[in-house]
Each structure stands twice: as structure tokens, then as C-alpha cells.
Length: 82
Image 1 (cartoon, rainbow, N blue to C red):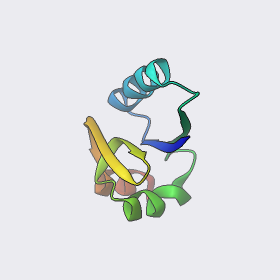
Image 2: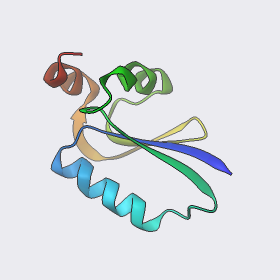
Image 3: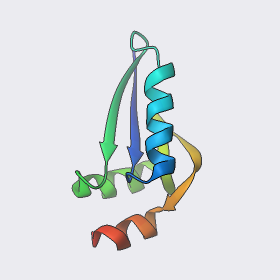
Image 4: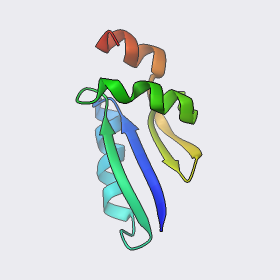
């Protein structure tokens, strides 16, 4: 089973992407974790290390998939003072 992490900042673009991802993911094939930076500021460094440049982003087996454009990681850090 593949592991995936969906990172987002809670903006409307991110929430919409999260809802769609949750709707289409086959939970028998993908172990999906949702990380909302507003609730998990300590995970920002992890996301950046994985290669996330903007949110929303889905990381599957170390491959980063940037979805739409909600905010850059710099904007996320600025807004959360992380």
C-alpha cells in the first residue's frame, strides 16, 4: 500500500482539493494522511523537505504533486508565523 500525505493551509482552494481527494482516493490502495498547517505548524519543515513548494500538495511515495495553487510555502509560514 502506498503512503500519501495531503498538505494544506485551510484556504478555500485547499479545502476544495481535500474534499475531492478524499472522494476519489481508493483507501485500499493508498494510506492517506491529511495535514492542515493551521493545526500542525510543526509539519511545515517536513513538507518542505519532501519538496512541497505550494499548497495544496499531495505527496505519494516521495513524489510531490502540486494541486492548483492556494499559497506558496513562504505565504503559509508568514501567515502562521512559523
